[in-house]
Length: 343
Image 1 (cartoon, rainbow, N blue to C red):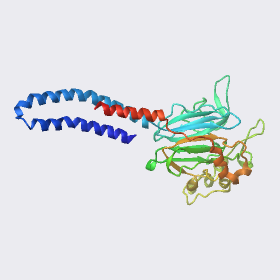
Image 2: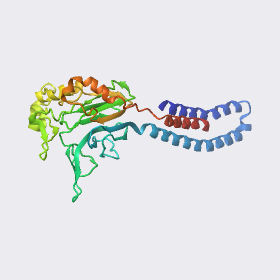
Image 3: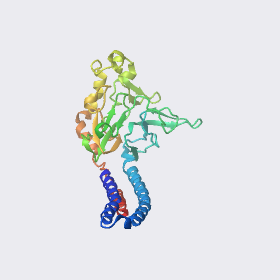
Image 4: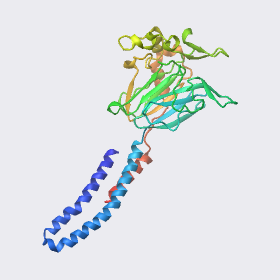
């Protein structure tokens, strides 16, 4: 796309210069005073024609630039759970805010959202949400963002919550993404890059249902029916610096994975299990769209953790690759040709 724009503008500059070059060659055959008035008239005519052409070309250039780069990735968010999920989205500080930061997905429903270039932030699923009929306050038993509304509006998830973390167009033009259990776990989640180039573009996530297998001291239990709702991190459950990688344990050398972090890692080898789990949990891609799926394998249980590789592959089969629309490409080519014909 940038190459097409560059060629169009280069052609404009060449066309703009060519009348002066031809004119110089022509006037060299005659005495200067005989062609002075003609040269001046031609330059005035050319200038009057060049101005609207320049305006039109720059307008089209701006349109193409916005159309091609204003939104760099499409995230397709799918709910394969057998219950409602309310996704929440939080943009990091200094990152463009999205027009939507919270919505609901019925079982089997999906929603595609365009994310701006160089966006950075996180996405998660809220569960068991209700709206108080008297006060109108919206709240969720897991992943609640505390906004009291469906939209999270700049607020993050209350732990425990499974997080999808992404930074688009980062260092070397790569996207960086991961699924994190550092703040605990509430839902199985999978990130699958589509049609990406560069980086490793690896599918990552946690497809295992950890709520039932969660250690008793980490479980979040519904006081009403005794159901296991989520699984806390050791940091949240106990608050110790050793588990939170804080204080004297605030470096990779001093903060090592605890037995609780190892529980998460064994179940979900590609997900972040503690703060310094970068080496096996951060992945890169470039120019990709992303499919983020809640409950990618609804029947997956703790016993299938050893078959994670097969589960990951099976979970994204049939998701389909997202390719740039041929109509969009055709429109861009048509506009580029139109620019060329103007000159």
